[in-house]
Length: 299
Image 1 (cartoon, rainbow, N blue to C red):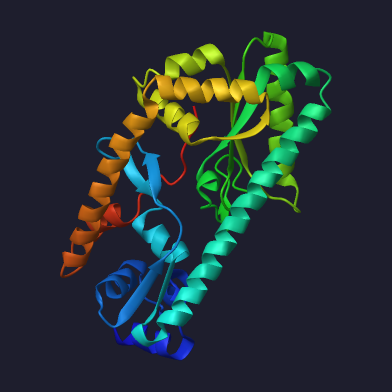
Image 2 (image 1 turned 135 degrees about the horizontal axis):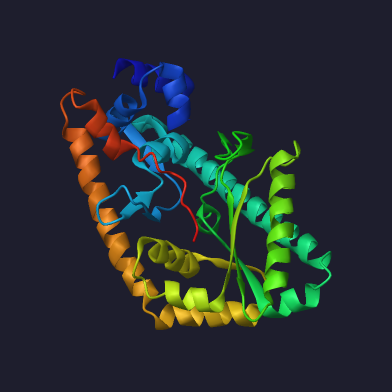
């Protein structure tokens, strides 16, 4: 406790990440002190949103995790520095929104260049749409360096989840679309000036209809992504049709049920962590504090 109070007195309000660096404390202990002390204020920015995770009972959890939220989306300070903490929190929220907007812009520019240079660009524009999903659509993207899963290359934070949906495109054209998308993915990943990761999938409208039946874990993930996804490029009328289908299949209501469970579980997890008198059951506590499956696959 003394380390935290001293750091906040000397440095003023800090993000959770900066506080941990200044004090040298483990993250869980720092979070417990900041969350349970009446001498410390916390300002959490951004949005908590649903993530589906096979390792969680019922699949539903909130993102960011408690730990990630504390490190990257929380400002802590002494009670006397509340106005300074508010200002710092506003600056942090603005920065996160700017990162998200920049990533969406990069994704749109990448798809635009790819389609415009394609020999069948008219067919793609008329019979395919590109949707972006993930934390960028919640203005929650980050730029913290992290290793890309297949190559180990460091990339700049949140990946770009792109779903390409086609209605009536030929099989050869779909294969060609996959080839050029993969090239763009590789170029962005390996270019030192960008170091961004695209995670993409291409599917037809019939696949979408099957996934919206919400019967398997993969279908649930795909449906959630279509529910939250935003228009990026291509046929807007096809995008509107997909959104109509999402509503007709009752996906928003099912997502709300899962999100309600995730929020309830989050409250219980935070209470359990704060009420634990010691860290004897460290592994069990950390399972509540930080879910290792931070990256969501798209289907």
